[in-house]
Length: 316
Image (cartoon, rainbow, N blue to C red; front, side, top):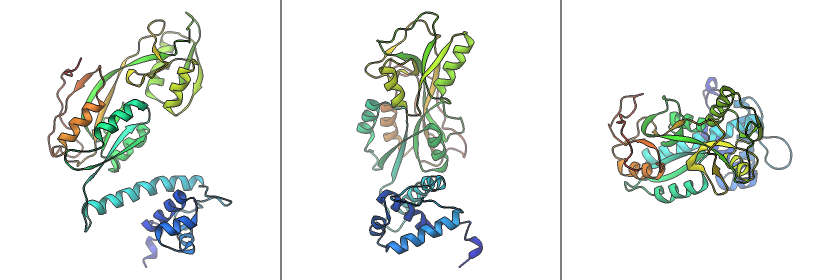
């Protein structure tokens, strides 16, 4: 055994053991899932602990991850998924290609239903799976190749291949039962670091308007719930407007448009996937936006984007 590499490589069976323990909520079910003994699972977890330099599980009843364990688990799931995809595509018994489509965490409930219903099967035979996550995580996964396609808002230019994009207006949203007093303090529903939040704060400072953050949460659904409850106003895309919300017409500075786009990981065969991509584009396209249509040039040079023409969408 090459011990000089012992702490530079994490054997994949150790990562699979950790995921099985967490998902099975214990060593017993993990052992059954992996057809091993509980002592073998325990030995794998101990070895993983030695390699990463600290405990991944807290002592005590139940399965509780340490801070280090949470990091290891996140990467373990990505590594296992890519391992399984590799065996499926290039192994001795190749199955149909799997496409992972990433959708942003701010995506609205009904929009998600519509996209999944229209795009859960591919006319070119690929198996489709979906992942919802924060923009930063999807950008990293596109770069790593664990996500094939992703619909993102205000993503960096370096994010994979830009297939198609739209310019969508931001709107101020509030509950009909919330009354904004002219010149008064603006109650803001917020989560620091998001693009709409940064835009809103810049506008408030530019116009000398007073504001107070009345609710903050990383979960976009919770922020929308706070708006519907009447707590405050929220800058967001019109497409995520839900029942119990209305657009603020007066009293607040106008918001700019922001860019949303569909990205593909480098090396994805866009020409072969063109029929599915057209379905996906149609499902993602907002009702009102300036759009840039799909065009395919395969293969694209490494680091280059797929060329697109700046023309207006055919829909109003």
